[in-house]
Image 1 (spheres, one colour):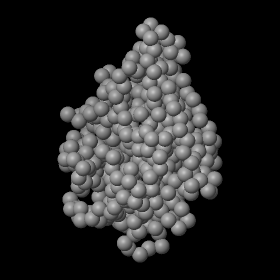
Image 2 (tube, one colour):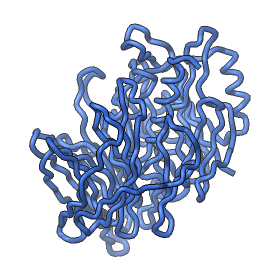
Image 3 (cartoon, helix red, strand yellow):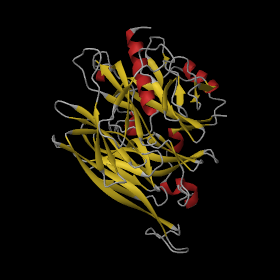
Image 4 (cartoon, helix red, strand yellow):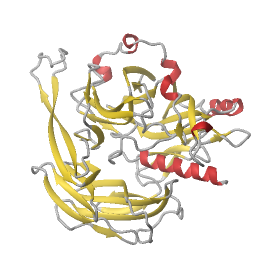
Length: 467
């Protein structure tokens, strides 16, 4: 395998690993890249391999449809407000009530934007549409047009997602709140979305960093049932009205959200001379607990900026994988696992002697927590996988073992060795593996050294039932 392809596969694998961690706080512009198309032979091969898929939503299939045509659902089809269940909160596909999956579809102007490595979903590119896929009807409908991008977080019956404004070279990022039932959109100009919990009870946004402190805003869903027959503010007879309580937390120095769950907010504090993990108990007036210092790297390196990639908050404890990367290629270099009692200061402890499940030293290990015990696994349970080399896709079961569901994807090349097709995302939502496939066009004018740039010729959204 030549260096160019090896680098591409490593970075693509890193993107996939990130997409599988739903509760991780993430930078709203966490990847910047570009994309390209495939040959007629590979397109025919892709079609043959997709024959067994449940549904393929081509972005062009939805063009030319008006808001009115796409929104002829009864309100209950779009969101059932009195019994909401959330799946894959914080993903690029957001499941609601077992039968709906929300996702973002790029506009034509966004496809023409050039990105390094063909990575788009976590970067603002231009116009887009918030879509809802109905698992029962096997069809998608337009919810709202905008400039949405990145991960989505449910709070009550609303969806929090970042949007952009301006050109793809000079733009501002801000939080938007979309109500799929009413189609109302609220813009929060001075904040952007950075995380949420798995249940849809909390969403965290960040205000402007002023070089001295970080302002975090935590919104908590407080559903308030109305009397039978009464109406909500929107005038609909929904029988329920969601309300938010908003708490602001000012953290000295630069703060990065690690996770939020069960009323615990966990952040990393990066000061001038120290890096620490802190917890805020949202159920106890945001009481602060200094859990301890982030461990230093074991290998000597001038790069010592840790990234917090997998977080599990369970039974009053936090379990965390910390990784270090090197070079402009963002190559994995080192990892550490730590745990702490969330209400005990100084309890952060490094976990040693975890038994490896494979000998792959080019990617970080994954873990699960069961009955208070942490163990390494091949994959995070109940998440999707897609092998970029073999093209196989599937999911990891409760034990972390891979269950293959199909094949035919992965990275494809033309006769000159140029990448022409790549999967950008694969996530397990509502018993369906949701995949974004991009046909890519090389854009050499925007290459940066060995980092190749691409635009998109075409995008397919795949929904494949796991059984």
